[in-house]
Length: 121
Image (cartoon, rainbow, N blue to C red):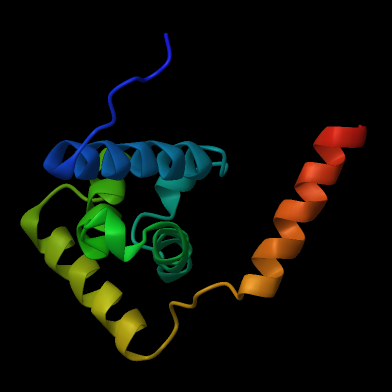
């Protein structure tokens, strides 16, 4: 059944946040032996970049909170010390401009090629 009524306010924020977390967890689970990476800076940077390029201001979702929730869900962090360490790593990546937005031209190219593949293949 089609959605006749849209989610609003806090419910929309909750839905957007949890859908994004599920998609990121699914992507991380495709990495072989990802549990061995635990708090690997490259893995944290990957998740931060995905979140940065997916969440918009209109979603009203805390990006840092989403990254922490992703790592909680894949059981990479288990205690309060791990959460604090992850938070400080996120702050370090952010303050040193390691988290990057994908340029609009690259996004447009990607979506155009993807659309053409679906249309003609």
